[in-house]
Image (cartoon, rainbow, N blue to C red; front, side, top):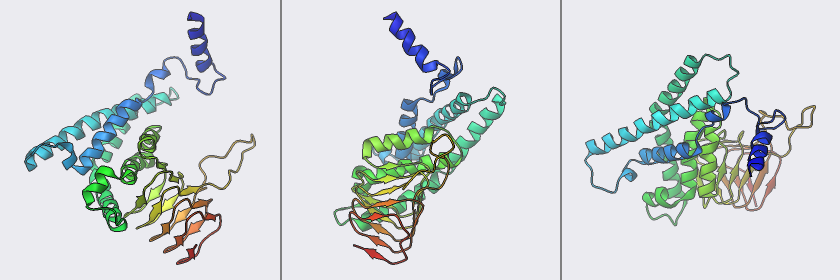
Length: 284
């Protein structure tokens, strides 16, 4: 047994392993459990009334939210700092990394009202767009598509700030619990509604305009991957679709590549699209 445990450790940390880290670096892996707990709390804070089933005064509600924000900020700052330490080249200034982690955390907390405003447009879009929705509260309590976009909007903020790993932990957690796989890099406008949401895939360089509605099984993916001299896909290039305003994409449509789906387009179910679609077109 000791021999097996030694081999398992040595193989992971060998210099030719894709998981190789210098001695001691593994201690700086961000905690997926703490990050998920933190962003679950933040989701409740964004929706305010779900924090408690008790009757509370406005002052008590605000104090409760502030408590949650303080706890979340403390945890998030520590986890962001860990990612800096994990990828540190041993030449960075630790004090500067600590300062950057605090600044990003403070900016994120201060921008939560702006994220909340976007989410309110998503709730309204879901209520307006789904005849089965009996009230807006049903959206936030029951709809997996709303939960997915809630986590993605928070993750997207950190992604834009260059935070490593944490945004993907957030959106992959959302993927696990909702069935919708939205990369934190995707840029999504206000009033976004995923009806049913199961099986939706939205790639990291996708852009989506305002008041877009998509159904289950829709893919906004990449058509092909340009390769580098070693035969590996080139990272960091634009490879996913751009969807305009007021677009509807029905179930199981697949839209691939850096193409434009212009304003007002309606894409019927099961369509396979790899070329631009002009404004107002209806594909059935």
